Image (cartoon, rainbow, N blue to C red; front, side):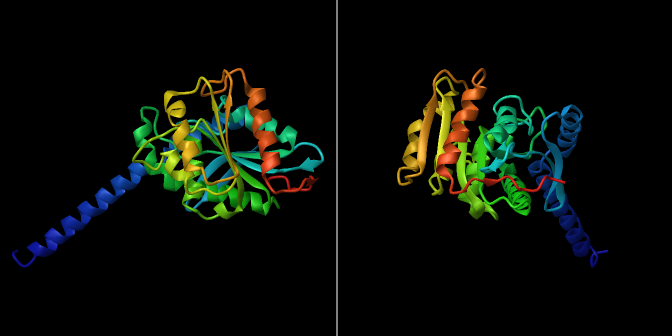
Length: 278
């Protein structure tokens, strides 16, 4: 019995370690059941675009692909939704997803990792590495379609995730030619603190917000600008009367994003020969 006690203790210690690691991984992972429910709902009501299942590591995730309309294709935009949202969220994301293609930009709106409904912002920073893997997968998908001109456009938490992806130089980030952060805020001491991540980005950046935006967005205007002081491709633009969700100003939002991207990416307008998503 005595001889077996150290072995038993080692076994119990190892088991507890495995259980602890499993708990940590569970708390850092997206709510997959919630993702699946939303994916089913979005597919049932989809009118514009094509539903996709992309693969990131061992996990599939939902996305909506909308090809550019007409004969010209300027490039493709990967859309990153805000906290707890989905790829066709009615504020900001859906207007961009459906209307940017009319200006020559195809859109790939992806499902970012999400938490259960009762979660708050503090539960989201651990999901940023998982978001990196999904953004990388979205870039690979577009490259397989023959797209060379790729931009990231994120709203709120999605903008923070996009900035983090670029700052970390995650796989595929070298293919991104421009970044639009809509309603970027601050979260000191976390990976979502956009002034810190913006400081590590050298490509063209549009920092877009509303004059009636959230306190954290308006309160970090100077810090965001200072972090990009050495970047000649950085522009900060306020939309008069817009709140955090640009309600009632969808057309203005689409116009500003499309025109800035067209001026600040190096893609050349070509005949729209990109493949249609399978």
